[in-house]
Amino acid sequence: MKLLIIARPFVFHGGVERATAGLVGALVDHGYDVHLLSPPGQASTRGVTLHTLSLPPLPSAARVLALAVSARRAVARGSWDVVQSHERTLRQDVYRAGEGCHRAYLASEARPSARGLYHRIVLALERRVFARTPRIVAIAEAGRRQIEALYGVAPSRIAVVYNGVDLERFHPENRPRYREAVRGEAGIAAGAFTVLFVGSGFARKGLATAVEAFAAFSDRGSRLVVLGKGHAGEYQSLASRLGIGERVVWLGARADPERWYAGADIAVLPSRYEPFGNVHLEALASGLPVVASARAGGAEVIAEGVNGAVVEPTDARAITSALERFRERPAADLVGAARRSAEPYTYAAQVRGFAEIYGQIARARCDFP
Image 1 (cartoon, rainbow, N blue to C red):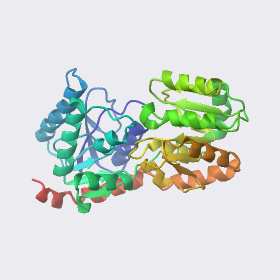
Image 2 (cartoon, rainbow, N blue to C red; image 1 turned 30 degrees about the horizontal axis):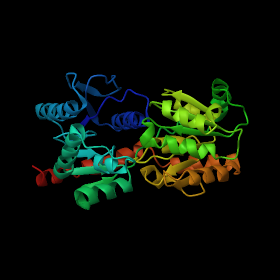
Image 3 (tube, rainbow, N blue to C red; image 1 turned 120 degrees about the horizontal axis):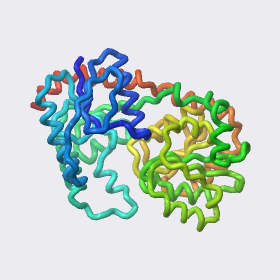
């Protein structure tokens, strides 16, 4: 099968990019003839034919529209069995809603901003994508329900295919391999209970709530490690005001997240909006319990009290309470439970989910000329 995937470059070391790279690699391994249509910046990928979209430097609003138009022209020039887009574009058989709904994201903001030109364009593209694409793929049940409710997409047109995770790269065996070294790098004592926050876009990911919750945590020898891309100044100031400035480690964006999962004891991810969040699977696969947001699709893989906890993302007290409970649990029990809960989420399982959808495309095209 000749498959064209439309996606932004997955070169930055973030959870979304790792998830896309893993899916593309698995499709190649399963015998698909994979072509990738992407703006400049995408590195060559094993077994994949790369097609580069030339986009001039443009403001963000114009760029998102230019990407949609340019991708449509590129699709029309080729011959494909299935076109799958991970972006809000204009001509695809399958749309993978990895970013969920922009409309739902805007509604989730603590201080909703005026809908400027960029947001209006994204919303217009989103409406068209959900109305005109034969098959929609959500990455969690929560996303499926949102799409059906907000855009009236019929249940017959939408399916859920969960992300996969690299179960070899993210593994509890990394703990003896990396734990001592990374703690040394970060200046964390060997026995200090360590909380890990991973995410880029600190406001949406709920870093402020994580800092507030950690400040109330009774273990004063504990440490909070923040890994991700974003402007940290206001959060560093918050930590200082709360008296925990010296107990928070700021790492920035890193290419080696598996080492930092190995160095931590629990992950805290209080996102205000998160279609899934591959960090959930990476943490669990590494043996870390996860305190997850009730607004994140990743909460669907959390069994309360077994491999983590599910809390409202603005409820710092609930997060603190979860930290207190898991601080008292035997580490070996938590590591095993977390790892087992991640093991079903393989890239092979993800490919099987998409393969079923690809098989429906010929019939679906008859309904969407």
